[in-house]
Image (cartoon, rainbow, N blue to C red; front, side):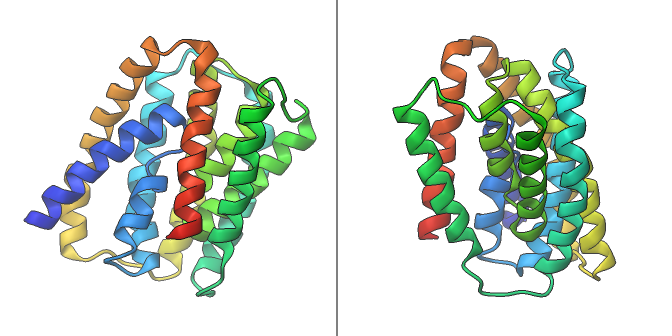
Length: 239
């Protein structure tokens, strides 16, 4: 019972932070759960919660749409996430997370010292960002940070940023969760019971994020996202 309560609290916090940054719940939940459960099981459990979190983003931030950007990110992201999910079941002990952390750390440092700079707002940037975020999501469950780094380049309004991140992640998450299930990953009774409670709780976290972002000025939003990218980068490098 204690484990279930802790998972519910973790889900609430992860959903609030993940929604407000656009990264999703995985960035917080995966490194915590991976300490106690095998990585494939962690990826499946968090992937299901993340999938519902994508739905909450689309419902709460539905005023923001950028369909060309969504398609450019989403199509390569779906293909790459399936490949990443398959690879996650095969490879172990590769320093991929630290490489990703170093990339994000350099990127955030550049953003803070060049606040007006942005990647080119074109199809190449979107396709590359979609493919890398999909691969990252499938491989070690933190694709939201990569997606956020590339979406930040477009300097989108808050609603558009969150909705776009949510709908892209939705299709990527369907693909990777299916990959884990087809790979034979299963959840035990405790995690299944926790899942029943964590899914509605994740909506509560997303709702809190909606209220917070309503109060956050647009001018500070990009740096807010960059600040969390920095924290993710540090976590990937040292843990």
